[in-house]
Length: 339
Image 1: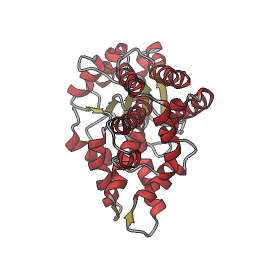
Image 2: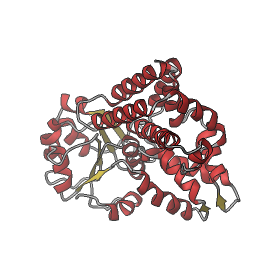
Image 3: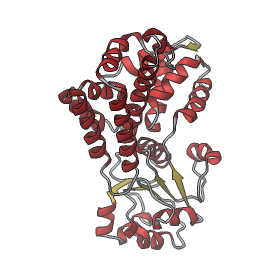
Image 4: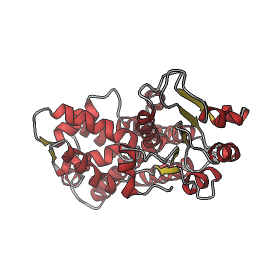
């Protein structure tokens, strides 16, 4: 079964009883991890339970292909359902999966966590066409889709959110949907009994209360601060933030620089040009932003934007190490800033 936007929410709330396996894949790595966690928690309460959870890489599964069928047909020593998780959707898993689910009527469950898979992927085809299997795609949300999703999520919590706060959050959280739900949950808790969430709330909660933010990373690149950049990149990757998310926010930052820089070069005074930004520039960020306006020419800004767009494209292609591409691109920008 190929899950669509319309039936995904219902599926995540309750997996249909006839479904025995799910492939979760896509370029939005954060969303993939989050959806895997949500689905897995429906099968077993404790995801670290050694008796009811079997967690393998695709390479480990391929070392013993019969293990997939064996685990799916085994009984838990402690009772209840067993969950088998495989990280990676190697095409070599095609035959073992087909064998495991040929006439399968057991109660155990399989989740495969994959990266971006094209329509010809053998694993994707199996899960999209299998009668007791499902495929869930996790694509990167753009600012437009987030601008619709964020107010809906806030509304479900019985609150309202200002338009400029939505604009800010959309640009800040773009690229990695896995972080969106956790950030919005944090924002709702931060708001407390207040029914209306403001831009100041969003700024204070989503950016200022965290050790680092994605925009802080690109600011360090734009300043040419290579040591701080490398430190924050490593920390972000360790925390599971996707390379695509960092590249998207970096693009947005340089696009803001380009918008203001272009207006200034056309004769608009700086204060007026800054006021054209949506969401408005946070007052604490103004000194850094002004420093980058003075440091970066329009030509260099466009070069950075083009490099970031190219890097995002490479990250979405199978075989390219996303974190390496992201790191190399931002360090190249930092080198430009130092010239």
